[in-house]
Length: 226
Image (cartoon, rainbow, N blue to C red):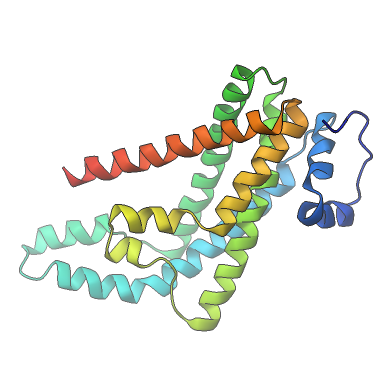
């Protein structure tokens, strides 16, 4: 395994370059000096912008879908349905919800990862896990930026089927893509590098948590269907 002790400190430009070509060099920095605040702020900003653009582009489609869905309903029931679908939300509220969701996800997911890493005999601190997680999350950020640009150019929302045809498959497809897979790969590399465990063990940790998330998504979907 690569020795990450006394890792050479990288400049910002080197970190950006190595994120794409040699991510373990970036993760090695957290062996001695965990850091994540700047990345967390960036994640929140990009997520908020994406949420606003997605909401703005989706609203006409959702309005049409909900109008068809609520035809013949009691007016009060129709209004409750529209509120449940978020049709009365505003862009600022959507952005704030997105930011809060990101912050909760980062810190809770990092805690879960830390517990699993320690079960697999990895030596790691919570701040290091948050640093790894926010770095791996940059893959998703790249995806959000590309998706936002696409929506602004095409004037069409992405993953609208997850809202207008909320099947389990559509929900899962909307949640996972090539950028999510990239994020998982980076997470495994980061855990292996900082926690000093094998890549096989770190991959198992990531896969276990991924499966747990899928099972939670299935369970939530089934409960909503009842």
